[in-house]
Length: 70
Image 1 (cartoon, rainbow, N blue to C red):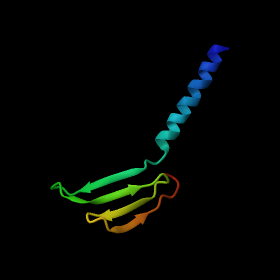
Image 2: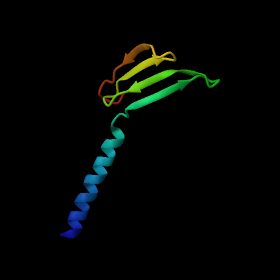
Image 3: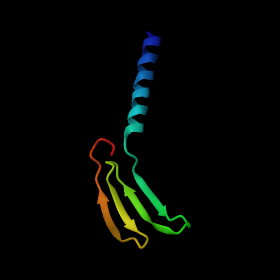
C-alpha cells in the first residue's frame, strides 16, 4: 500500500516537472550588442507573447505565441 502511494506520488511529481519545463518562461530579457551596449529589452508574459522595447524604453512591437511553444 505504501509502495503504491509512493509510486503514485512520484508519477504526479514527474508529470508536474515535465509540464513546468514545457511552459513558456515569463520575464524580462535585456539585449546588448556585441560591444556590450544596451539595446533594449524583451518582456515575455506567461502565455509566451513577447513585447519589444528599445534602449529608451519606447515600445517597438510584439510577437504572439501560437500556443505550441513558438
